Amino acid sequence: MKKVKVVCLIILIFLVIYGVYLGVELKRFSSKLGCRPLITIGNIETYVEAGSKKTKEKITGLGFTVEYEIKTTKKSDDLVMIDVLAGQFKLFDKVILMTYVV
Image 1 (cartoon, rainbow, N blue to C red):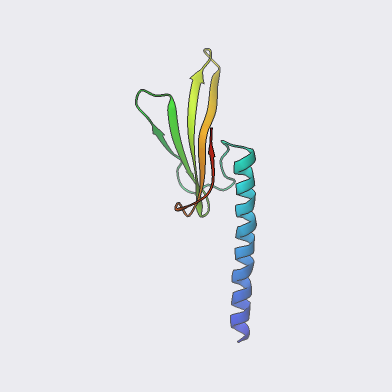
Image 2: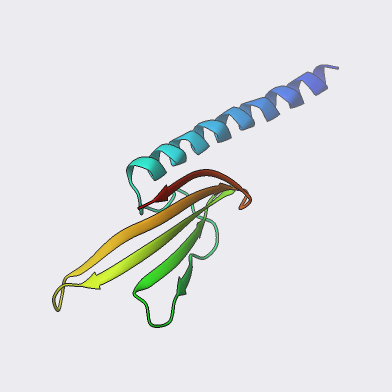
């Protein structure tokens, strides 16, 4: 019985830590739009539409994905403006927790 309580306590501690991490990432998503998560897993997928200056970027974090729609504008030879048009924060790549649309 003691082992079951210890295992349940450890699982609860991991869930609380993950909840705090998810809260920090949601706050970063809402305040710093366009930034990457603190911990990324795998590759950053980028989709470029033909004939358009819009790019879709999908970043995988710990149990969530962040998707951005980005528009790039070249102002001069060395200056490129990047505008974030939309963003989605999805839990387990299924449940939308937060969105941003211009």
